[in-house]
Image 1 (cartoon, rainbow, N blue to C red):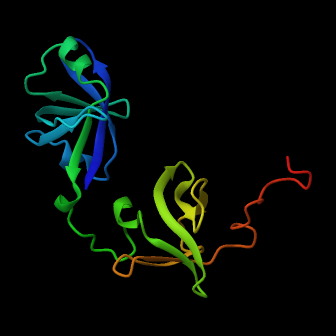
Image 2: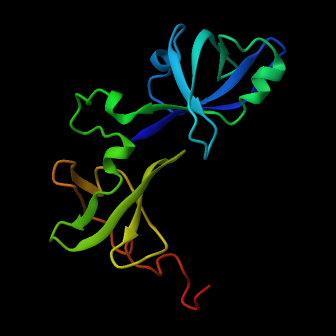
Length: 183
């Protein structure tokens, strides 16, 4: 499975540097000088390789210079490029309470009593923390957002394909947050 570790946001300056939106917990390894990156434009299948020539932090952003990209025009042509890795390249986590997003997506979600809630369709990362986006059992559209916190997500078994939750009252109610008049 292909995982995105970065995205080219724009060019920077006139010497071919690019601004990368980092989407990995290990940018110092993934974007180290000499690292070979695989990248492609969204919705394109052709993958190109790029070697990191220089990397630096600038005002909280990652700036890269890639071999063969020596001016602003070449850097602008990379805008939107997604840098990817294969999930098979990832080392398993030593922490039993840490999971990669792709490991959670597709898992069945159940209550402690075994009642099926749905399936994890995505892990969302927000400023307030991670959320599991769940497609309700038997529902073809819509989503249920469940905070990915220990107080609610009581256990995760990737091997068994199950996430067990103990939601507070009202969280699973489809009308949660709406007023009595439906607005």
